[in-house]
Amino acid sequence: MSENEGASLESKLQETRETISWAINEFEKIALACSFGKDSVTILSLAREVKPDITVFWIKTGYAFKEIVDFKDRLVKEWGLNLVEVSPRITKEELEEAHGKELYKDDPKRCCECLKVEPTRRFLSGLDAWMTGLRRDETEHRDGLRTVERFKGMPVKINPIVKWTADDVWNYIKTYNVPYNKLYDKGFVSLGCEPCTRACSWGRFERAGRWPDREDKECGMHTVESV
Image (tube, rainbow, N blue to C red; front, side, top):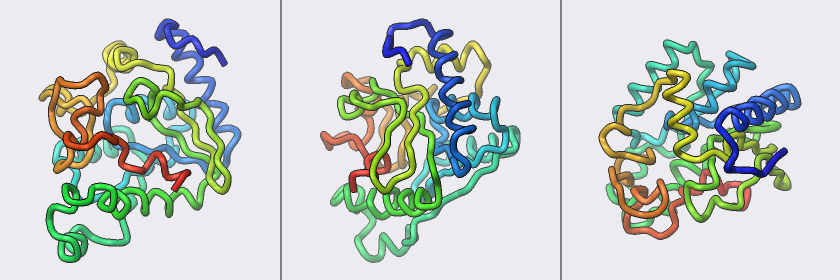
């Protein structure tokens, strides 16, 4: 596969479609991680061209924006999604009773471990492979991502739009009339849990609005293979 990240959107689209087709045909137990942000919905729209009933999973933390929940429900209905909502073993109420209502601020790593990493790890244990909407230019922590990643004891991880830029994603959404979450129209550039996400235009990377007071912008869901 070409590593030319400056290629045209059409050439990237061709490569992405080839990657998705290969992944779906290669792995019997495969699922697509979806936050219902612009990147994962882009992957979802392309994966449905190959397998309309592909398993999609969403981590139900209990702290999602209402706009994300509403958009999820809309796509489930309009696209007939085969969606699995994966809940943490601990409920939002149990978490707040045990650790207070601001664990996300006091110990964000522990909060993400409970609400995102644990359910992700549990769901992935039953898969051969999974697809994500990760891109290299989202943060400095993701610039080494590969299209296909293999880690011992983990399902194969496939990142079909890893070489795309944010402009590529928005051009694709506009050109192909792909629905997107309207939080982006309100100044949000990256969508996470409501208490930890801000609308913003600061910073070099898209995830600057995630955990504004924290350098590490990863929740742990996509570093689960090293946990």
